[in-house]
Image (cartoon, rainbow, N blue to C red):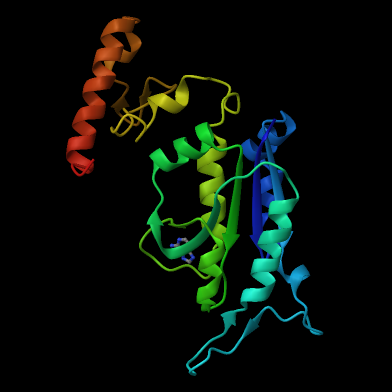
Length: 225
Ligand code: ADE
């Protein structure tokens, strides 16, 4: 059964390139994931298909209405018997990390991502979601790019998506270290040489060098890790 990722958004067209290209497209073609987009606007009961309104109490901007979003969530949940976390994308959520990506890829068989938009959303929407995720301490114009970030980070960890099964565990963050430096041909470029050890063919020594480089790099750049 492929991992099903539902994305609820007012802007499904924003995802066309993302789901139609590269790793996500290949993962879908291999039958490993199923990305399902749903337009929240289809659930508006308004004559003009309105999905936002002015805030109670006044103030600038528009607020996403609770009814279309909640009706959309409920309809999407019912489309598949499998249950999975309903995740609201918001800068007020818990910050998304690699370990959360692993948890979703390894434990969930379904993920429902809800993209907020406009200046905000009706607070009552929160009650219909299981968790809230932020991709970092900055404010974007909507949850669409964050939903793509989470989808990309999760899908590439689904077994079989990347050709090489070992590579996701090698890389930055998975073991708490940043990735070691990598090189490919040519052996020298504008006076910058590839470290001799990598051309030596001594696999055990290369392993040791890489582990050490990962440690040094992490200490220098991200001592917080
Ligand atoms: N929506 C707007 N900004 C966001 C962020 N940083 N993370 C998740 N959702 C958001």
